[in-house]
Length: 142
Picture 1: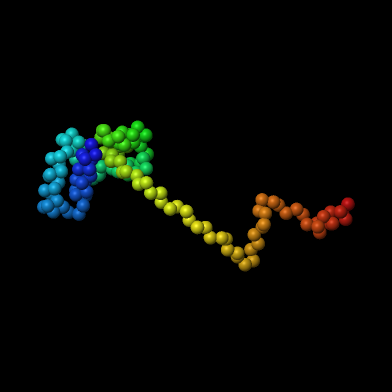
Picture 2: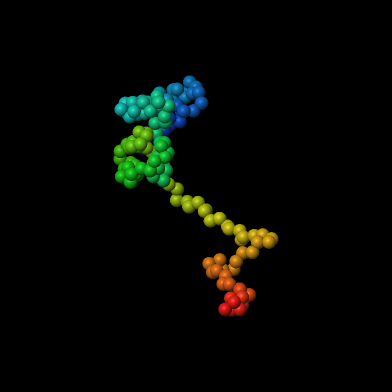
């Protein structure tokens, strides 16, 4: 199944490139022979509408319509036993193998700069209690 989808993906790459030349047309015909007629008919219907016929699946999301795919569909694609269509856009799905590398996400955070004339409270969660001058004014009033 994976070979069939790779053939469709090559076919799609050739058809959606700049104006294809004669060598590209010969390659298109060679690839079309390798694909079963029912699969090719569905692919051609999508292409005739101006859509791509094969969509890659990255992070459980169809790159054709950007919708999250059900886990059952992902499992079938991982097994590689059957062709699957996206339930939303109708494209054939090809699972992209995930790389084992974890991208570096850590970003160094620069310390806050002091701005002249702005005081930053030491304990932002605590409120300042009324000052001594205000306390004396309250005592004298009584």
